[in-house]
Length: 157
Image 1 (spheres, rainbow, N blue to C red):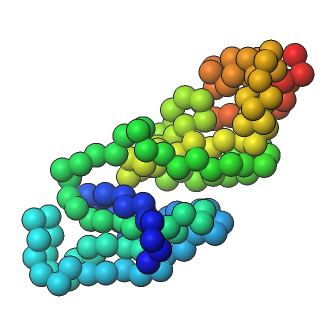
Image 2: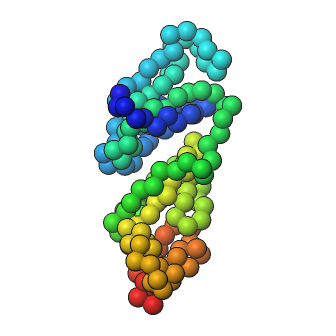
């Protein structure tokens, strides 16, 4: 296990979530599945307790802790994309697998984890500052999934 690992609390589907992420994002994998050595408040001996995995190179630990805590937008994965095809592929994988759309390039997977599917053209436009950033930002504010062509057009003015 790496020195710093993000721990994500799931009700009971940490393994399914980790396998979905590993199939969806490059540089992602499931490394280990650990079973509970005895009964615990939200499960039984032998149930999957934790799952070690990476998402786009980020070390994570999925914990099946039960229904007590829910995910919210205060935590999200931000995935940088190079073009509309890549943006569409990730967005459609998350939303099409029981997730839901949100605003400004955000969506939520079926386990409640928030994702920002962010084309690099948007990040670059915002970093440029000034009128260019303002136009790109205002264009983004009306979007759910980011439209790369519309951001490029807004950058140009």
